[in-house]
Image 1 (cartoon, rainbow, N blue to C red):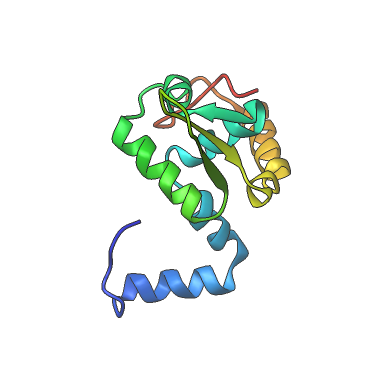
Image 2: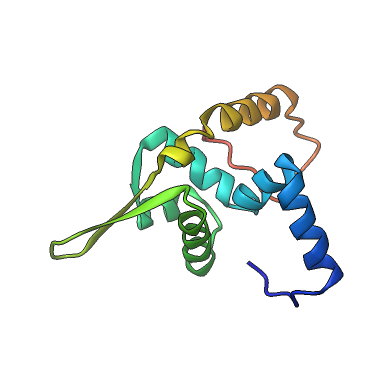
Length: 130
């Protein structure tokens, strides 16, 4: 997350919205270019390793994937499982809170699929989640 002065207008507005608006709070938890796709892949595949996620998220940098995973973990939506073996094995899975987003993510996917227009090009679309 960005660092802002505690008394900045942007920070005050963000705090207000997150405290009193469920939509803003949800978007603060799952918003960003990659987080919703990470969550959708984990809903679909249950557990994924870092490299598997990187391969599925075409165009994501390693740094951005690390940052997104850390934010999702800090928000309580995913668990990082570290296996005590050599070579080291790390997997990511949804928490109970993360699984509670299932219907929201499915609804967003269905809405997007039903309105998908090839002439409108958002910055990033991951087409193989369905």
